[in-house]
Length: 395
Image (cartoon, rainbow, N blue to C red; front, side):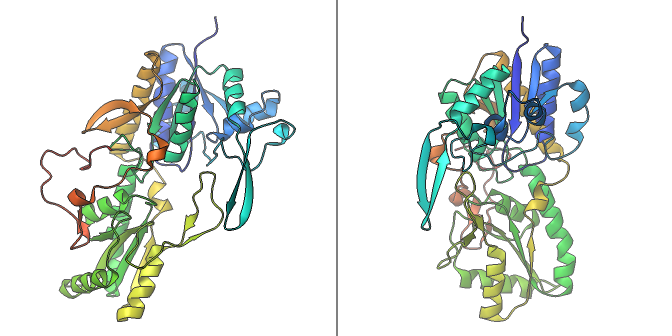
């Protein structure tokens, strides 16, 4: 009798804690004589894999065992590697599929026509060919949106949320968030010495395309101003608040942290480059734009720091390791119970299994009324009694 086989993949940006999930599932599988197969480079493994080519199988498929996962949880990143592949919107067909027929869609963006192919049929064929009976998909909104589609098509799938933006719906926490805040706080605190020495305004940019969790929690931990995508500030007011901070600071400096998607009245978020597989373009640095405005309006010198990629690098902190191990074990338990279409989550501060989010609802957002002081452009510190540890309920 063939052994039960579980597939596991990581998609989108890397964060610390992913390897802990992979190890926990692999170790549990070894105890139950269940085979665990790693799929390299996220969804690309299932779109580009050629089951008839040994080199392709060796490139995309990694049999996981206790020996090759024993120490992986001690470091960040993902041993399975990652990509931003969207199987339902492929801009180019793999060479071995060029002659095959797949559904085609056409779209126009900035006057440029684009054709994309839907390789979902190939994904299903490869899952069947690999004998994968249950799939664990670890990712953010984009990766999990395709996981939800596979679930609708009958694939038995369990999701695990990861993103330092912490903006996946149905959960209060995503793997990578705690380490990101720890890193941001450390970087901000370190740079106080330089910013203070030069008596300037320090401007920090962090990830957060649609939601301000990373900026708000970094500001919460370091007691500085913040600007988030959920609330469009008045720029003159922000500048006056920063000048007030600077005047009342014995070292004559001030600090503010902005989400990459933050904006002020009259400012349009600047984007550039081609859209990625999920339709997202890169955003120009709002920190640089703010620095230019401060210089132009009041003549103050600034120091800008882009903390984005550094926050997702290196080893996971305790919280991310704890949650990652627990989310992985929850996913494995769900598989043993025959469940599908669910996601490991934290709800009201408790571990829970919830439905994979509906991609049409978009990312989770901060509740401005309870978390953000719109008069002072900083976190709200009062009235936290009774809230879960991460202050915002799942939505």
